[in-house]
Length: 256
Ligand SMILES: [Mg+2]
Image 1: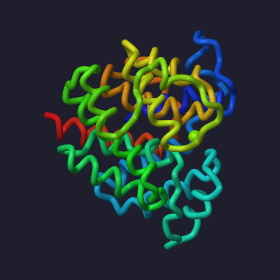
Image 2: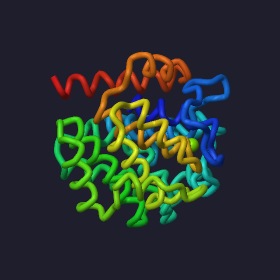
Image 3: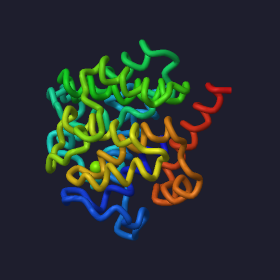
Image 4: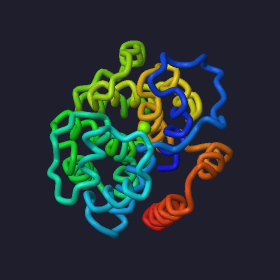
């Protein structure tokens, strides 16, 4: 989960750009947490038992309103009982990390990923993308080797995850189907978390969300270095840090 947050923060200052040189500074004073972090923690909060996905997302967004949300999502968040609007955007996969860490098996991961997506992103592309991210995390944290993981995700979700093809830039693409394969490919081809996120950010476009998804999956594959974890935690507000700590405690107690 903190891998997703760190990716969001690192990618935040390059959103909409062509992609910086690979040796860019990871944590810069222009970095900030964005909608990806807020929504990821809202989904975690819901899974921890506080309330349903829609109520949790609305509560978190209203507490952190100026974080780069899409217009449709923001309108949904500020109107109680506004229905899902069939978004195919990358908001569904970008907030799915907690599912992969808390689900006990594949069926649960897929069901929860769909449920959290469908409150806004009830489009098949968005649901599939959220399930792919959740399943990638579940399988990776259980130790599935990268080659097998690449093959499994490719065949299950119909994604081309061969890095040479998946990582070709496609401009500012906010679709779930256009964001998730390159984000997964970046996590799968790298040998460590930082390299994965550098690859995602350097691709350019929707860099915070690319790096959020890459960072989420790369944490499960490679682990998150302590210095990066500490730096990312430092960008959060107290209320978000508290949810993160609660989530980490829940993951630890589930694994032990
Ligand atoms: Mg964002």
